[in-house]
Length: 272
Image (cartoon, rainbow, N blue to C red; front, side, top):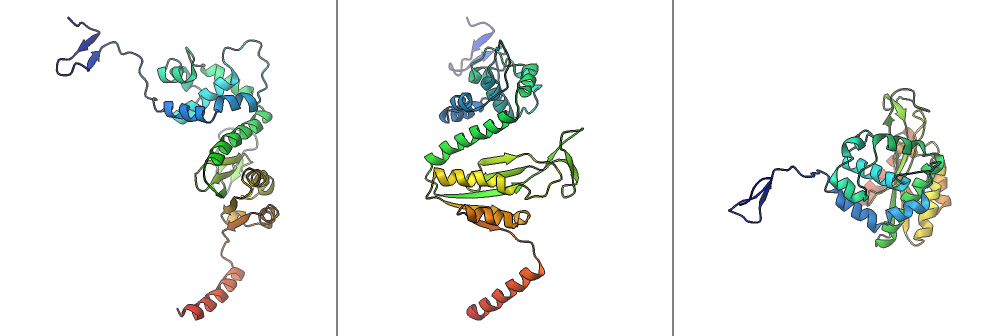
C-alpha cells in the first residue's frame, strides 16, 4: 500500500503525488544559459583573462565562481546582491555552479570590493573573446556597428554623477556599441552624466575597428549613429580605419539647400 509522502494515482501509473515539497526552482531556464557559457568556454577564459585585486589567504569561493553566480543572478532577474541570501539553497543555482551552497550577500559585496579598474578592463577583454568565438564561427561577412549613448540614473552622491538636461535627471551618460545584425553588445564605457553624446568617441571606437579588421580583414564594416555623432572626429576616425559610416544629420538651412538641388535634379530625371 502506497503511503504519504508519495502516492501513485490509479488513472496514470507514471504520475506521482508528493507531499514533501522537495527542492523546487523557478529558474530552470538557466540550464540553457549555462550550456551556452560552456560552449563559449566562459569559465576557462575568465580564469585566463579576468584580473582581481585578491589578497585573501583562504577562499571558499573563487572569484570566477562568484562572477558566474553574479552573471546568472542578473540574467535570472536578481540584480541585487541581497537576492543571494534567498538563493543560497536554490537547486538550479547549486547544480549549475557545482556548489553545495551559493555565496551569500556579504561574499558578493566583498567580491565587488576586489574589482578595480584593471578588473573592468579585463572584463571587456573577456567580453571581446566571447564575441570573437561567435563572430568567427558565423558566416557573417558584414558588421554594422551601431554606436549610441544612454543614461543610467544614480541616487545619492555617486562619483562623477551629474545632471543631464536631455534626459532631465541625474546619472551617468555611457557610450555603447552593438552589432546591428545580432544585437550583441560589443563595448560599453562609463562617462560622467553631463558630457555630450559624442565625447571620447574616437578612443572608444578605434580599438573596435582595428580589432574587427584584424579578425576578419575581408569583412565590410559600417558605423551607424544618430545626429549626436555627426562630428569630424568620428568621420576622420572611420576614414583612417577604412570603414564606411552612416550618420544622421540634423536638419539645417545649408543641408536643406543641398537637398533641394538634388530633389530638383531627380524630379527632372524621373518626372515627379
